Image 1 (cartoon, helix red, strand yellow):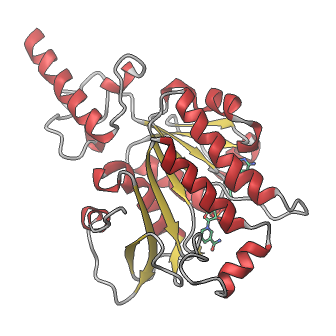
Image 2 (tube, rainbow, N blue to C red):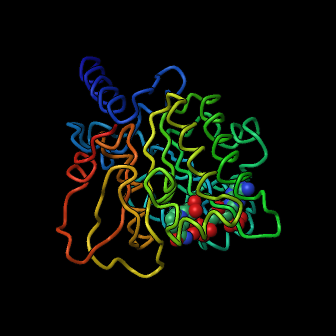
Amino acid sequence: MAMAAATAATLILRTTTSLFPSFSCTTKSHSFYLKASIMEGSEITEEESKGADEKKKIFVAGATGSTGKRIVEQLLAKGFAVKAGVRDVDKAKSTFPGSNPHLEFVKADVTEGPSKLAEAISNDSEAVICATGFRPSWDLLAPWKVDNFGTVNLVEACRKQNVNRFILISSILVNGAAMGQLFNPAYIFLNVFGLTLVAKLQAEQYIRKSGINYTIIRPGGLRNDPPKGNIVMEPEDTLYEGSISRDQVAEVAVEALLHSESWYKVVEIVARTEAPKRSFEELFGSIKQR
Ligand SMILES: NC(=O)c1ccc[n+]([C@@H]2O[C@H](COP(=O)([O-])OP(=O)(O)OC[C@H]3O[C@@H](n4cnc5c(N)ncnc54)[C@H](OP(=O)(O)O)[C@@H]3O)[C@@H](O)[C@H]2O)c1
């Protein structure tokens, strides 16, 4: 009996550490109890994890946004628990009507600094997905406050809580100047409003130097309509046009949690009708990080 329990615990630990390399059984002991349904490749069955109903919890910043909302919905559908970091809890409750025991809301304004964010993330989140983006306003510094400092604050908050998995929704063309796209209308347009792409690029660079296990997802133009075409994934600084459904962006963010091929990578994504359908192992695996 004791031997069986020890074997099950070892298997759970092995699987958990392969998904989340910084996993520490001292700081996140609850993580020993994972739903078998979200552990790809695991030999553990529902039976072996019986009695343990805690799910892996993911903190989503910008959960009330058009992409963030889809990320939350897809995480819940895939068997994760979600801590939705939002500026306005009442608004969030109306964005996600009904009650779900695996969805909680916490106040989290990314401009308020890493300490408050660390409190919001708490010590029970295994990974952070950042889907924030400044809301247009008269404040010309808003892109810097949200898309740069806000993201940096989130990374610092992760450090405080020993969270070592960070997924960022960024944008294609963030490095447009280096790609020879200085005169690309999209690059000009997005930078006219507070140097948005430059702000995002600098936040990306901060993440990459931080040592955290990151996946930076750079989508093309975002669409609200359902997916048309298959996902095309390319390395950083290659795509300079194209669009993609927010549903597919959310899917890539959630799948990044499940595939180690996504670790420490920047991926650019659009959708194309003529593109072949590829698995996420293939998509992430095809990217060789420079
Ligand atoms: N639009 C495009 O075509 C496009 C293309 C490529 C990449 N992107 C990027 O993709 C990401 C998602 O875009 P989206 O259009 O889906 O986003 P969105 O609908 O504009 O949502 C933005 C989210 O960020 C939150 N937010 C804003 N300021 C915040 C703050 N100070 N603290 C915490 N949260 C804050 C908003 O919260 P509230 O709901 O409280 O306002 C909202 O949840 C953005 O980074 C965007 O730049 C967009």
